[in-house]
Image (cartoon, rainbow, N blue to C red):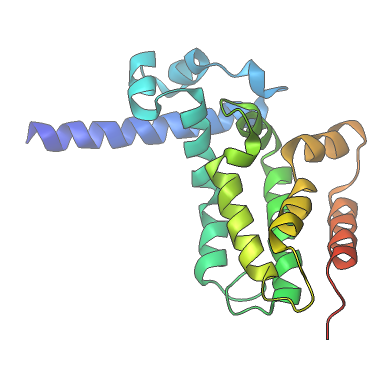
Length: 194
């Protein structure tokens, strides 16, 4: 029975930490403002609990990011059009990129913190590699497109968190305008539909 209670406590603590981190990132001015000590205090757990559950700040950021991303992942893997796998590639590519952009707009500080944390390169991060593989596989279905790997990188570059933050934060580009600009960019990159 003690093992079951400890697992329940660990799950409850994990949920409390993710909820606290979520609230802190939403309300912060800059991702660097949120410390592990702040998150532990807001969750009502010790810092040791935080580090045991997530390893480090980057691990916590990844867990929070993945939790928020889950509905999009489900839509991409098994959902209906325009994100789901049955969608024709000319419609799915812009829909996937729009989903990434909207996710980063809705989670600006978290996305920025994740892309800036830990890894020597944002292109080696698991979440980036997952999006790149998916986009590349859809691009491979488009006739006349010769380098789907590079094209996937180039298209994803338009949704980098630092660019999204710059456009939304410093240049004050409205969300719908940014989405339209991305859609136009994607249309210009892809070969004409047959």
